[in-house]
Length: 274
Ligand SMILES: C[S@@+](CC[C@H](N)C(=O)[O-])C[C@H]1O[C@@H](n2cnc3c(N)ncnc32)[C@H](O)[C@@H]1O
Image (tube, rainbow, N blue to C red; front, top):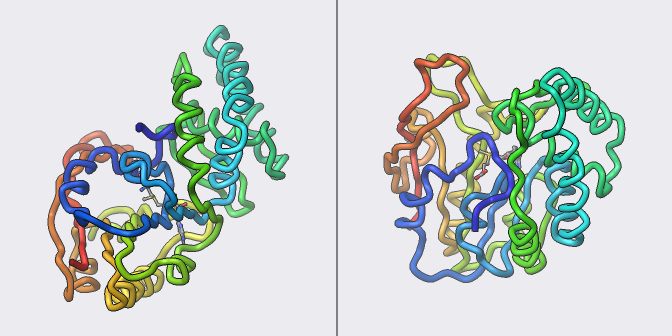
């Protein structure tokens, strides 16, 4: 199935390259940097463990899991009002709902619907927060919100009902993954050499020390007999961090750079322990 969310660094472009390289057979599937979950929803692996550091993303998935019909009704109402408005009204509505989302951080149906709204109406499906932890992505200037139909909400919820969903850092996968399981790591990437860095998915960021610790965990899981795969940028740092493993180049199309000439095909690394 297709993911409901549009997510920066989403793996839809790489699904063929990734699926060609997943183990033929494995126990449980784990994806601890879930984001939009392109691979998870593609594999539709029942009983998986999925996690992300972003609590608002995880609250969204939990509401989707438990109340797909209600969430659909809530977002459909927002969509019908939004689509019928003039452009000026839409921009004003976007900033009004963004404020509401930032002012009420308690998990609720409303904030799950607002999360989805901001993902669809914000610039490029980006999720970015300022130092105060306020979501600060600008209006994406879309005239109509592209919201999937109810059956996709239900189908996604049915899969999520079989999953263990956790909010928090990726390290907890270490307690969960057993021999024969398959772990896919899709962290914020090591920035390309010479490019303005784009690592800060959340106000906390994911720097060189975290990349090193992640590579160490990759190695420790591999020693345990877990099949491990990771995506990252095809950079010297990544080649060095994973020099004991299989590092292959795959081509992706990326769209996160605001400079038009820098959009297009990018070489990425796909690393496997097997
Ligand atoms: C490259 S995106 C994953 C994209 C995803 N594979 C997809 O298809 O949409 C990286 C994700 O890692 C999350 N993240 C950042 N630091 C993390 C950490 N320490 N532990 C777990 N997740 C983290 C971010 O919130 C973001 O959703």
